[in-house]
Length: 146
Picture 1: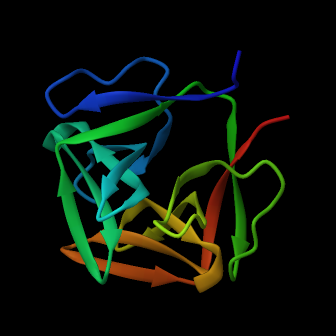
Picture 2 (picture 1 turned 180 degrees about the horizontal axis):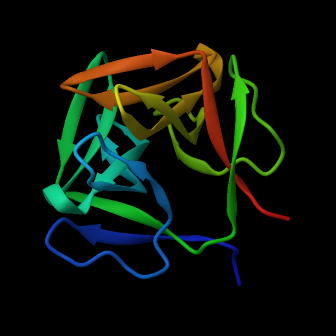
């Protein structure tokens, strides 16, 4: 059996007990690790059940999704990294339409621990935040625990 798996989810459902917690928004809402399809890409997403939605960063903006997948199981660690470095065991959260892997990352910004996408060829982690796509060269990346 795989150490982790993605479950099709929608905003109206309860979060599964094995969902991977990604952080807490500045208003105290829990953030979970998810992914959603947007303009040809599977993109790592922040899922905020308290708002009944998920958000992805793409093309300079933050995009709301009400249909998405949520990452399940609890065999992970967050590791500090930077500049597009992808450590062994990094969790692939999606792919671009050209086939480049996108990994699950997170940053601390404006009082929130926010989940986003690590885009290796761009050397950064992008997060969806306040209607924007924001870029960070220092970030944490989700890895499979050994």
